[in-house]
Image (cartoon, rainbow, N blue to C red; front, side, top):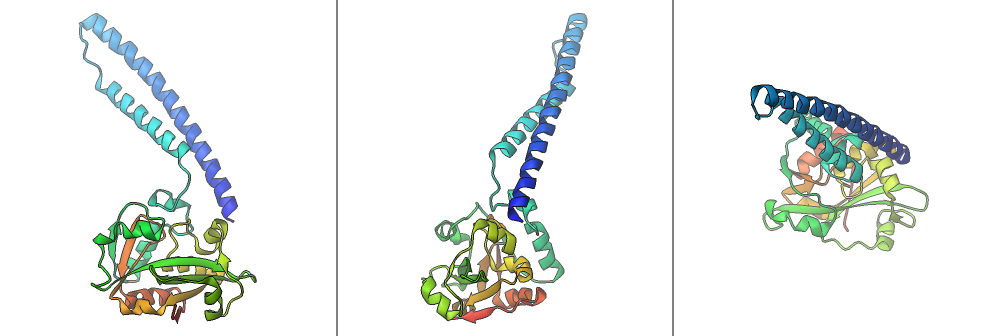
Length: 252
């Protein structure tokens, strides 16, 4: 499914690039017409002031050139720029929370792909001493291809060999990016408890670090990694109830 999505997205990009090239051609022709008219006005009326219309055309062509360059050189990542490739976009997900009357505090920041990168911006959130719980998320599968999502405190040391016995699974390994998109509907770098909104339909089993219940607020990405939501454990559990997910709280 993920590979089909990527193929379709590449065709969309190619079509977009061709469309932008066509628009640039049309604008170039308009600029030629503008230059001829400007010369005509200057020749007959001794005026060298350019038409305002021509300035607009030049600005539009410049914007199209920049947009084409962005699309051509950018690969999909876990940021908001590519949320429209997700089964549920971040915007749509946040709207669901609002419709369900689940309260949260919203933050925007640079894309965060790792725990270390996340720590670099955590001064905008509550610290651990203030009751702020910061997490890491592991998407795993065992040798029987059962998929699990582990949500742990960011500093938790997790040994997969020990973990497999704690959760009653077979030999564990990390899921591929293709499997991640297929089962949780996110790109690498944006795995989050919220991705269970997709995982629940793919039989992904959720395990939550019991120590997270000691914090007043938990910080999680809303399906993209340049946004973060602050939420209480109570409201997070309300979210799980809305999507019919029963997390298994374990000591890691």
